[in-house]
Length: 381
Image (cartoon, rainbow, N blue to C red; front, side, top):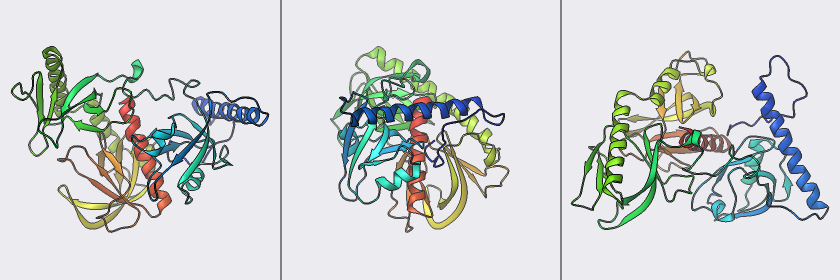
C-alpha cells in the first residue's frame, strides 16, 4: 500500500502465522530485487541495456511538484503519474521500479526514505528505473480506461462534451461508467487519470436536440449542467439509458455504498488491508462550508472511503466520506493551518473536506495514500 513504510525482507520460511498470500508477495519482491540487481551488474560490466532499464530525468519548477506517486518498500514502485506534469513528459511509467535517485541506490530503502530523498531540496531527479510493464503485465499496467475484462467499466466510449467556459465549443472525451455508478471522463482512451467525474446521484437525463444533434443534458439542482453529445442517435439513446439506470441504482443504494455503511460498523482494527490509517485534524463544516474550528480524528482509508473514529480503540466509525470522483489538492490556503490539504469533489453540491497533519512528511504519506486509493478504485471499482 502507499503508506507502507515498513518494508519486508525476503522470507526464510513460511510459518503458521504467515499467510500464503503474504509469503508469495514477499517472494515476488525478492525476485524483483534480484532481477533489478542483475540489470545493474550487467550495466557495470558494459553489457548494453535493454528496454527494461531506463534513466529518467524529472525536472520540476521551483516549488512545484514532480507529478508522480510511489507505493511499497524495498523496492518502491511508481503507482500513479499525473497528467501534464514533469513526470509524464519525462517518460516515467506506472509500474517502474525505482533503483536509484540521483545516483543513490534505493533498492533497500523504505517508502518514507525514498520520499524524503526525493524532496530533499533538489528540483531535478535523475532516476534509474527497471521497467516492468512487459514483465508483470497485466498486474502493473498503464492501461487506462481500456483495461482487462476483470477491470472493465460497465460502459465506455467517446462523447462530445460542451465546454463550461464557452457556449459553442465542444471537446471530444473518453467516458467510462464504472461499478461505483460514477461517470469518469478522460482526455483520450489511453489516459489512466480522469480529468473529471460525476457521481450520478439525483441527476436527470434530458434530450437536447435544439442545442446539438444527438445531444443530451445531465442536470441536478445546484450543480452545473453537463451537456454531452454522441455521434449517432442510437449511441445517444444508449448512453442516456445507461446513465439513467446508474442514477436509479444510486438512489436505491448501490453495492459500494452498502459496503461502506457495513464497514462503518466495524472497529478500526477490523478493517483488513487499509490503504492508510492514523490521526488527522479535520476542519469542521456547516453544511458544505468549512468553519474555523478543528477536531482530531482517527481515520482509516480503504478503497476510496475514509472512515472517522473518535480514537484508535473506538468500536465503530461515527462517519464515512466516500471519495469516489474526488481530487486531492496538496494545499488549503484558506485553512490557516500548516500541513493542510483538501479533498475536492467534482460535483459542487458535495462537500469539500479539509484536513491537516502534524508534519510535512505525514502529509505526503496521506496525499500519496489518498491518490493511490482513489485511483485504484477507479481501476477496480
